[in-house]
Length: 60
Image (cartoon, rainbow, N blue to C red; front, side, top):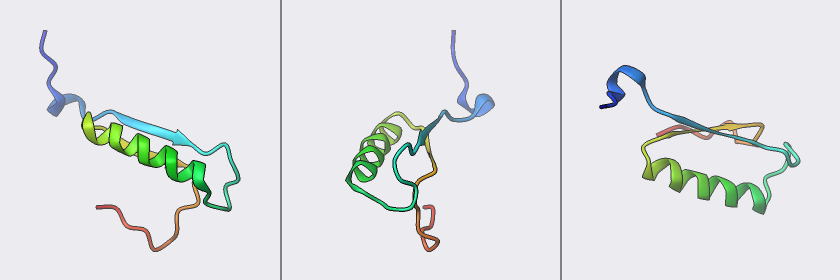
């Protein structure tokens, strides 16, 4: 059985922030770095929910 990604799209890995949503701390940085590497390695998208991302941040 073959899986055609062009018909189904990409998997999105979503991270929910359960810490303080107003300050960016070390646990935020670590989990984003680890999940980012995982998403990149397997061709996934990465979605961040409730993380304090600055307004000036842009997507690649």
